[in-house]
Length: 231
Image (tube, rainbow, N blue to C red; front, side, top):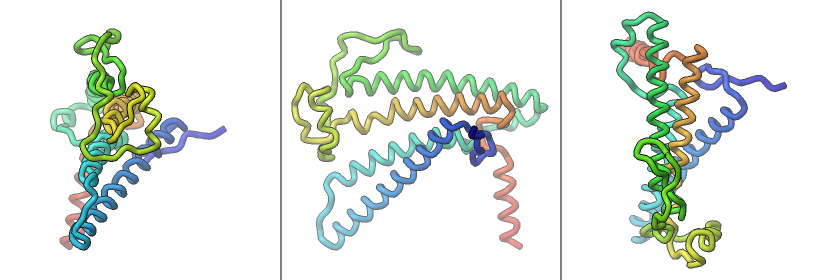
């Protein structure tokens, strides 16, 4: 029987949590690598061969958006988000835990609304229906015109996504990459963020973490390192 491992924050982690964590770290590393590679190739092409990848800048912009959204959820995982804790630090440990739990519940509610909004924006591009309700999903709206025919400006269509043509584009060929693919990060990333909010709140409840924001221990470590460098 396998035992839960511990992540970089010292919290015990289930097998599912390890899979998600490894996926996030791998995705962030791959995206950074692709951005660097494409930018380097474009610079060489421009200054050496007087040419360029016409779709390179758009792909880098898409990758950067994916990187930011992945980074938001990953920073919740490793407790890297900044926050104001001047008042919270005046409370006793029990009071700080209660405030952290309230913050976690607020974040979960925010994550639910953010996921709803991202789904409602992405769904028409996938020939799906957005949800009803202003704040929380109350079913699906019928008769919303799909936007599956919307494509990117310059990114060429990849053969591995041709199966989307009969599925959402009525069999019509895509000349450029459909926007449903880069926009997929919206519902996926917000679902991941919601998962991280739930995970962090449960961590506070179980006592494996103190808050959802970075503690002053990091600031103290930076100050100590700066003092050592001066010496």
